[in-house]
Image 1 (cartoon, rainbow, N blue to C red):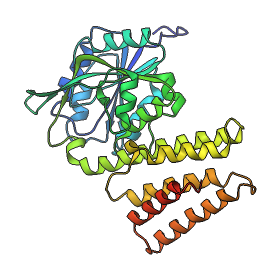
Image 2: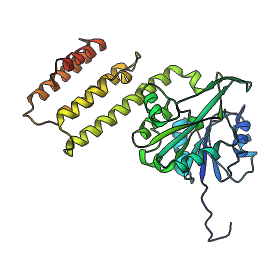
Image 3: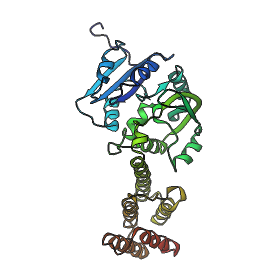
Image 4: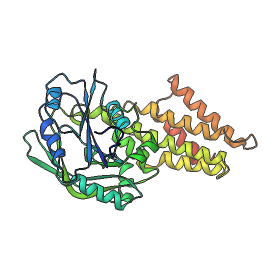
Amino acid sequence: MLSGIKMKNPKVTVLMSVYNGEKYLQESIDSILEQTFRDFEFVIVNDGSIDKTAEILKSYKDVRIKIVNNEKNIGLTKSLNKGLKIAKGEYIARMDADDISMSERLEKEIEFLESHQEHAVVGTFVKIMNENSEIIRLWDRPTKDIEIREFLKRDNCIVHGSVMIRKSSLHDVGFYDKFMVRSQDYDLWLKLSEKYYLANIPEYLYFRREHNDIIGMKYREEQLKYVEIAKSNALERQCANLLEKVKNHCIDIRKATRLFINVTIEKNMRLRENALEPILCFKRLKTFKKIVLFCSYRFLVWILFSKKINRIMRDFKIEKINLEKAESDLKKIVNRRLI
């Protein structure tokens, strides 16, 4: 490069994190290098691999590939955030080291985001393949924003490796939550859906590999717990938004609390039966307390409600009541219209 001349930034940054991915890594990288859309950089974070991953990466001489080597394994979430900090593209396209992108994937995702400026994320339909690259099933997911939002209340419907994301939107919501060891993508979609539109292209542009070593198979139970944490985080943000509206006199405390209760007991936001239930349940109660205590003393009924919340929490902590009884008591308070 000539001195003093600034090279044009690429339109897209393809971001991959790989840990001990020697078996399928070359096939995955090649599927990106063979894309019909050419204006991209390929940031690959080698997350402390101890197999032949580093050797495979060094064998590529394509100038678009930028390799970041972690001295030790720090996990997918932190590795992706590390890659995002150096990404120069206007758009971020994810890619997993086990998978394959169809040659037109980037081109079609670029076309979609360029023509849908209100959208922050676009994924694709996915073909699931086994260890032998045989197609074992197809994943069709909702394509329109309104359908995706409804689905996200229950579970994820956007395949992480298939997406392209507007980088400005990522900066707006603060990248991936570093505390989300699993389901970091689901948590991110929930955050982005609060401000932007999401979509899936109804074409099979991504091949996702399922085998015994992938995160989703090895850590399924743990992943489900992080799904619930993501839902709880979304509720926290909704409540914080309500509290801000109360402070700014956009809505009154009565309306804010009713909205909170509606969100909390909504069918699709109900807690699943797992070990994180006590934590999530009372995280929600504490958030509600923040809203309730913001009211002035003339709303005596609000203070009484807050005391009831405190009593439920205290009894739960000293094991006077179990989670089922605590939830039941909260519902009774709501049903008796004490708010």
